[in-house]
Length: 358
Ligand SMILES: [Zn+2]
Image (cartoon, rainbow, N blue to C red; front, side, top):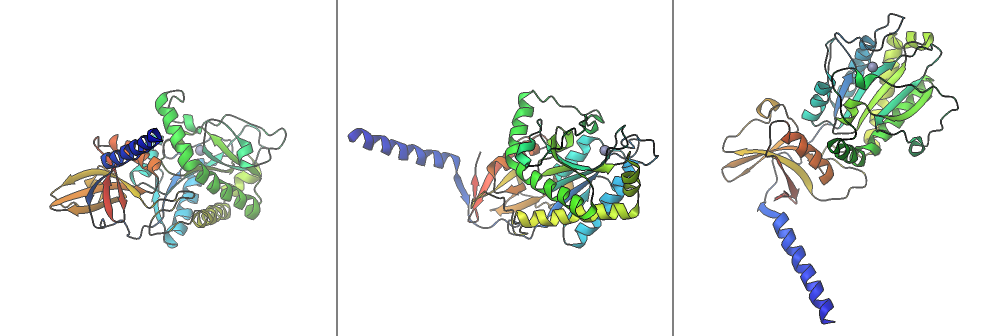
């Protein structure tokens, strides 16, 4: 009896000590922008561009031109309905995959949508497919029936510039695990809405939601999808993709899928709500502190945005990103540390109080 009592006493004691060590109460009062209205932020990535025309095909249609038109039309619709849109490119310029991912991570987007068109040597192949990141195809998870004799081929989009990664390295595996835990469900949800809309509204053959090792999906730290809207090499689908009507209809379907997605995850402009995560703590990454009051502009913070600031005494503290998920904010901390803020660390806000987490 005595033993049990002393054990539980020790347990309580060590927990309290741990809590005191980990969570140091510093400040009372609301940070300036924690509860500010935050528009839903979408990065639209038109694939290829400039010296990279996209998938080669005999029809003379250029993937880079089609996807740019779809991207701009989609962005206009999203902006008109109160969303914030950032294009990786809004004209015919070349960008590396690393540059594309950096744009999305720097602005700490809520969604990353990469738009592509497909090509294949057999012109009878047609249909759309939407990819989420993953090294293994697990169709069963998506509950999508796979037709017999479907043609599978190696997609070359993730090999289209100098970027490579080693999927067997520890670094990659940690990243993959975190990404899959945090974003895969949401990415699949959005991808399913896109595919359903294409099939239902446009009668494009549904080739399914698929997982693939696209570099740009692996390296964007938010729900991310890559849409292959259809095959340029199929005569009928190619001319549809290359038509104004086709581009607008495809854009409409993606737009509608994003609106459905926002409803499904209960997105609110006040703060982020993630499904299955109930926490009163909001995490942020502290990147800087000092006596100077800096405008919350990305040029003051090495390209990062989604910034906020509080004042404690005479010191201003600056934060990057905001999340209810500690796992997600750890990814953001890692990103901030490798992008000019090597001493960045995680803080939490609960009931307006700032806590240091690490
Ligand atoms: Zn492409």
